[in-house]
Length: 228
Image (cartoon, rainbow, N blue to C red; front, top):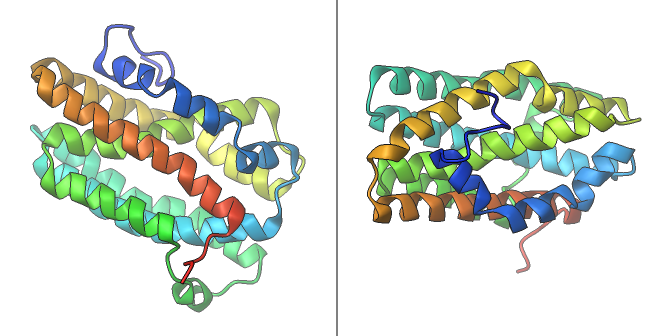
């Protein structure tokens, strides 16, 4: 089943239906429309890429915890492979951008995490360690799914900026779509066994991290810093 076309009665379709208003705001966000038309300030993009590199390190930790808590061998393997991929494959993309903009690894390491990044990653790890397995999956899922949806839409439009097109090609491509499909299938496999309370808890995690996705792009656009 395609990642963007889930069965209407599936657990993941229910989760997605619950963030319709958030998704509408994400699609219209100036950071993403700026990627599409090439008008996004390169300084905002560089800031975002550095913050995303920091984010992926913590996201990989959350995925590894999901793997440790998975109900079957397939889930353990999938999340552990994805944790490694978050560091290896996507970091390779970031490092190509760092080279384009003349940034060294030391420059990136010396840049502190922005407030929204600290809040988002802290929430992810809290959900992964402290919630149920379903809550952990609900928390990590928006980063997969929303990026795939964004990538698909932007790929159809393209970008006049070659750097932004490279980003779009990564998240709008078939390879990433297959990764997302795996996680959605895993979430749908868990859904039927959940009580109403457990489904609501997982949905709450999903909605919260979907909001953080919007906030992350807002953070990048504003090049967010600590106020004090």
